[in-house]
Length: 292
Image 1: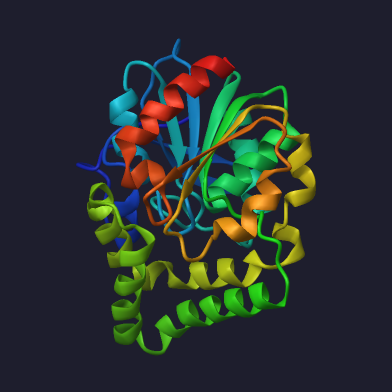
Image 2: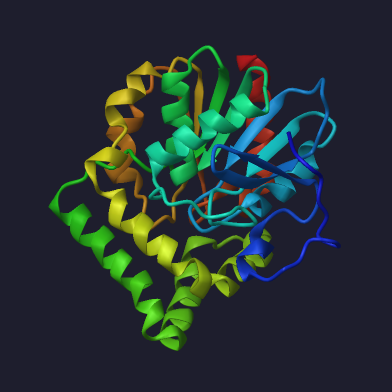
């Protein structure tokens, strides 16, 4: 199902590769998909499938995986065109990634597992849980996509962000300076500094995919609110209060559609498990244990 790799032997022709995990990487290929993924191993351990935000990678989960090593098996794929995974022709988005997740976990023949997801990964986790209730023990999300109430202002904002990323092709120097400032607000915690620097370094390379993703975020196909009542598993919602893009005020009503929810707030920019990994793990482990 996969061949083990090492950063010592894998080439690094792309800066985006650096957002992948630095050890425990494996590769998987099926039905036109070629994906890399972090796998900490442990056949008898409970499984956490971890899904990163757009433009990030499996490296987001390294600190969490190290803290939970020996107690949980962490599996974290790089989405297509991100990290070390090959791009596909499919548009990035919540429903696309939920379908990819379905193929991925079936190929790995995983038992029942817990899902952890951030941003577009959080939306994909919730949608997968709604569609596969018997496969999912629990769900942990961080500022998930697909829950915003939408509307005119949302479309104006997402299209503006898309144009920002599309501008990288015409004025790379200005874009790179803006992207660095932008990510100082996205990942604010000191624990996230190294991964933030890797993401910023890959900005020019990942910009076309980000432009495509932002164009689609406000489109109806990425709205998963109607599926949320079908999520049977308990859901721990970890919310970064400082998030200027995925705002609590615009997502609160959708989260209230989750029947078995618990909400915890973090002093973070967008990714609680990366910005405050110790508190995140301290909340998640007993939550998963109680769900299991």
